[in-house]
Image (cartoon, rainbow, N blue to C red; front, side, top):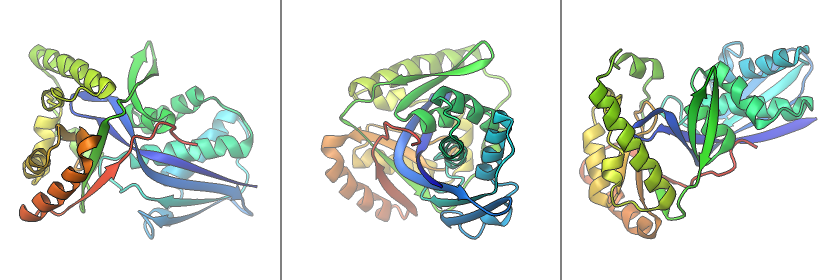
Length: 298
């Protein structure tokens, strides 16, 4: 028996929606699981090849499969796991969440357990530790992750048909732990109120396609001011995106990738201008124009 699952990349925060907003994007990790002969055997192609398979006991996908069977209170049968990864590692595009969610989804099919998406989401949050990327990877689309009592819940929002996105991916990564360590332990009330307004404006813009206020909506006072200092070309890359015609630019997750939003009707012009501007500014980032994935892991 062999099961194959595709899981999308995700961009979290989207500026002001710190640890709350997530957006699933059309860049995928594919994970297969099949019956093996002994323990867990892991192979990897694409991103992380030659690295991730060296310590399968520490690999998020392998750990997630084990956690799934522990939740079932059943012994883990011998399995072979193969990961074919498109999502860059440590770039702020949800690679860890994709590994976790993809493994749990595959294990769910493989075992025949029939867990709901909600159950898979809660288990994934336990493993990952935060809910924004996980929610996008499980459900797809634009999601709001919020806590109700002791459990995270998810509200999936409409995404405007005219919304386009491009991610600007650098060659070097940035660890989430380092990006979180840069944040202050406390925030002022004024900063909280600032972000509440921006999140409301941002979700309205992404849902309705009215993008005229998007450059204001992506502003943030909780994490981006501190994380920008860890990314030497942040401001230059942001400026290039706006000159190319982007309506709003923000860090993708903890960075160092940036995500820029635009009207799809202008994509061809923006693509041409963006390549030109990146070359002029000598910014070494790959521009990936990605659709919103509405399905999530499946």
